[in-house]
Picture 1: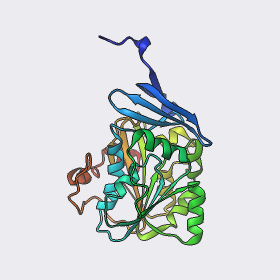
Picture 2: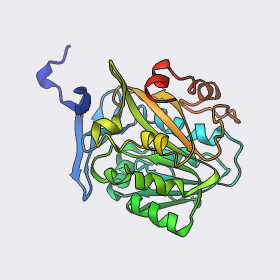
Picture 3: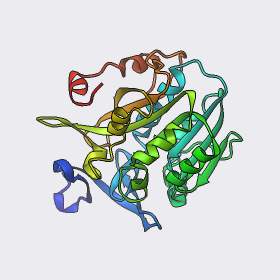
Picture 4: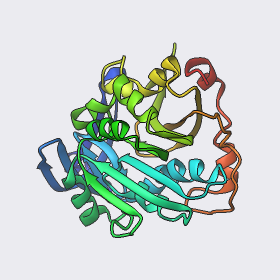
Length: 294
């Protein structure tokens, strides 16, 4: 029997900068306003439980592995590493931590998340998180911008810094700045790499990052890193994440040494990731090269 429009529970994510919306028929399971943001958990018949922050999709049980595996395994398996230290900035759903901890050569992981309720609710409802009790892992509930500033002042260094950030609204707005980019660039080892990511829209005249459309157009981390050369080498690879706006998704690597991460050194197989996909993800469309500077 066809379900009438009136009986559906349509939820919309709006990207006002390009007058774009996508909709999901979902049932609300939990909603609260934390000290930092609105956190909601929905149930979708096909995609399972869905986490949204300030009305923007962060993860669903159905497709979260597409993002988390490509964010982690490309930088970690694109180089022969030993004794790797990882910093996760954000990542409250725990999926990045889960994938990082799969590698024995990772010896230390710090995860910095401002909102403890995101961690708690994600553990309760999504159940996609890594093991916070792993002896290699340390969860720090604090502001990422302050943590990074303090880490820089202490001289702390990391081999891989993963920026698993929500859009530049609410608590994430403090990290979409030149100052934050300068701080994390100074917290990277000489062999290290920073992993950033964003949804991408292509319009008639140019391409747009979701960061630009949700916040200040001058606070796009990719363009800051490309223009200011805080880390001299910037490269990118691509994937899809079906529930993110536009589905087209970009990953960006910032480094000092310009290492080529496009060649996998392991035969690791995930639900999404595999060595063939790893290599193919660095084949960029012409419009990326023309509009995004890659």
